[in-house]
Image 1 (cartoon, chains in turn purple, brown):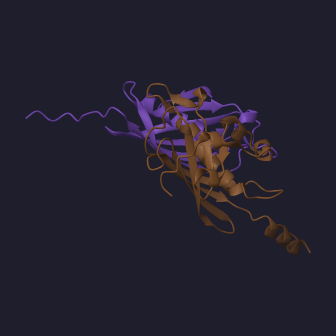
Image 2 (cartoon, one colour):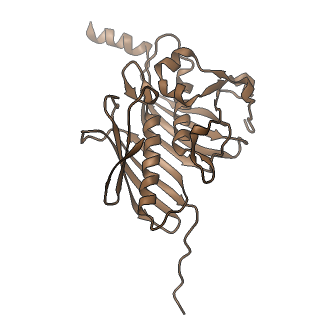
Image 3 (tube, chains in turn green, yellow):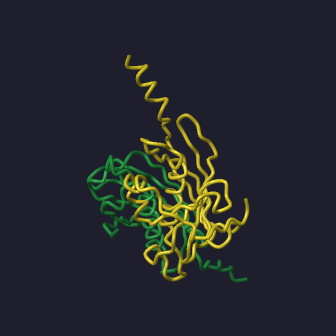
Length: 125
Length: 161
């Protein structure tokens, strides 16, 4: 996969369709597991993009809805964004499209742990 | 069914027909350990460690996507493994994964449990672990749209005649 585009807080990674990403060779459909991997990477990227400085993060959970079967004739784009950051956790959303299409093939929400929690500053007494 | 720690040496490759149908499974390099060899009641899926599966070189840890894909495939194969002859691949509806602890750069196992096998939908729970079954790396659940094979073809005949 490779970096494809950036729009404000939104990052986009692309995955070219290869034989290795197929989940149904007869019908030429992309494997949903490959989509999950793309989503996980894209959401992680969106969190890193949102945070003020680079820090280690780890996926806490990820939910993916596979809205429709994904043909393998075009690049697959995953737009991901981080809509909320707390001292410990970052929350993400993602949508997956075929290149040149406006209909998402999958949507996802997830959360990431910030491995080095930021301590809240206490107000001066 | 605690402390299932199969010997990777007992693993065998997946059936050729399945690998042909699902190239992504071949790409991951998954293998299968028969239930009786793993002292389990269902097949244990085995993902040998490979450098290319590392997603975080800082920890280091396996890529979350590789773990997710492995678990998703384990569920799919768990449903398919007993299918004879021609079969239709179930379609994934949704997938939920919780990463409980990081998966280190070592061999990984997965075990599935079919929580519900309805006429149209199957729900499969998947547990993924490395060194201790009781210390899972990730827990996941997946819904499949599941079309029964024999019945629909008869049904189709009934409808068309």
